[in-house]
Image (tube, rainbow, N blue to C red; front, side, top):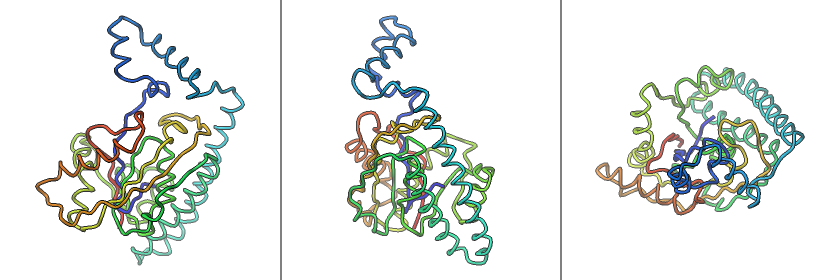
Length: 283
């Protein structure tokens, strides 16, 4: 479930494969000009990554353990979701209570997911997590979703694509929890509106923005992969950004401000592109 105290997940580089993230785009372009084939580039990237200690050659046993963890995560999520769907149905007349229960489900389920995966987690700046604010986070891995579910404050209202309703149990719980859905049939318009969404929320509510910087998740579990690695993960809450004087005529300026904050606090392989997307709202 996608949550946040105004949680907006800023867009990070998409990796075509795990090793794409190891080789810089400049090297890839140069080697392409030299006439080297993509396959040769990827082999070189893999070799450099292994020799540099960035990744390890992993046998079938570790891969099998990874798959077992993912299956256990799925079964656990389905069980907790089924329980909370029944709770939500009992709370149909009380929408605010359903929002809170949706967050409690996220806290319980997110914590369980991280325990099952077993990645070492370091949390910094937790004192800022108690602020009533709009929380934003970078997003490069399925693990980011588990972390935000677990760590965002109670009272969060999330934003997800409208198709989430078709996810068995999970989608129905999301709707019952009074979270918001958007139509992404026009991807360009959706991305444009989403990347500026947290700014408009800040202007309307005058709430501060608390950036959550997640690092290492893209190495622990790459998007589209079924392989979870025991890489360390860190979550860092940055000091709140005051928005009480923000105005609608400077939206792009504020988007760039937040972009630059992430570019400064993330490692090279995770730095955001020129714009953000996937904003998520919470109170």
